[in-house]
Length: 175
Image (cartoon, rainbow, N blue to C red):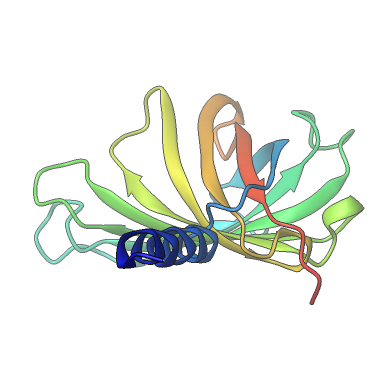
């Protein structure tokens, strides 16, 4: 046997293994549709500033959030299925420019006990924001994908509701 076919076989095996290790082995695309309920003030506030900018801009600001995730727009009529917890940091010297890092912690339903890890920029409060899903745990282990977040309304001056569509590439785990 000539060395060329053997070399080709080694290359193909190595490429296949690298593809699986990089997540190229396929998986199930799951769409999760939820509503995030935010409260900006009062005793039940779910968001708050931690550090003000020393530059009189958004650059350097830090805020944290622990918002409710529900199945519908109406907080009173929709069950709580999880939390959207994380922080936002003003990273752009010219406004607006933020970095967000968040965890979706599912507390009820089929994904109870599972999480999604989210990361990405936030450039403003208009339109639809797209960010990355960079990982997950539980039934969402090895998750990746993206999500779309859109403010759909303020139910009062202190509260807002956003619609979130998660598009999650999931892998079944045998471990």
